[in-house]
Image (cartoon, rainbow, N blue to C red; front, side, top):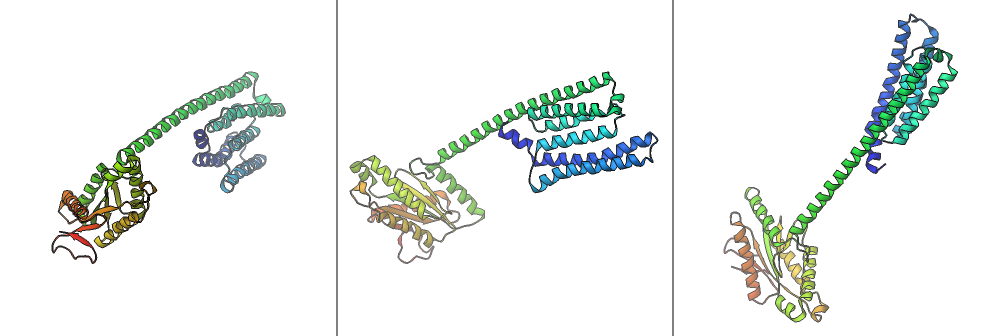
Length: 376
């Protein structure tokens, strides 16, 4: 039986319901048996009352054992439920041997075994019931007098018929659950594939950063959100200096190595609230949120300094450098204005010597930071 069926068969809610049913059966059994004897004009029979009390105590002890194992040992056993059901049925037949239909109560443990979705347990319940019925029939003269041969055959056919139906139900349940499992697995596989495809469509394969398209989508959402919930927002554009020369001199495979190392430095330096993307060939873009302009400047400067201090054996033990443009978003200016500002600052960094960070400044619009290069 597969894992899904095992989990269903051993569901705590189902097991709890069966135990509750057994406790209820004890009460109903005593009430019904006493009512039957009352109808037969034996309401004052002390023997019957003692027998019913002993029966109730015995059934309570058996059910109590199953309850204790379930509550304190977390033990859920289909075998125990089946045996408990057989004990219930046997006690009822012993006390009411003169009622011809009472042996039919043995179908109860057969039906209980169906909940296991296990054909072997159903067959075990059927075999044990045949043994118990045969023993009762052999040792109880009153039961033999009550059951004529045709009734005995009918009872045996009833047990067999219910068992066949139980096996069919279990088989159908197993097939249904297998189909459900396959459908669930197929749906999960499709979901995983969709997640993978969605990630691939958003990520740059070489650097494992978000791509150009995803960068613009995220920036648009941030700016839209900023209209109703203002938050600090800065954009940095980072460009590897002389990258074309690196490719032409050392080969594109070395250029790819440098791109990966730069992306690694960027990702290990920014904070979890920041968003980084590979914007173009040798360009990267970082969106900073919930930071001051000075904090964002310090982060991109740290990135630039780390790369400038990194020696690459592939570049004949030379370092690669970055030029960086940084701009702060002003409410209402739009995405294009923000990006143009950062791009203009980057151009200024390139034009004035490279390997530096330049911050876009609007004349009189902000307090200037000490030691920071500004481009107006």
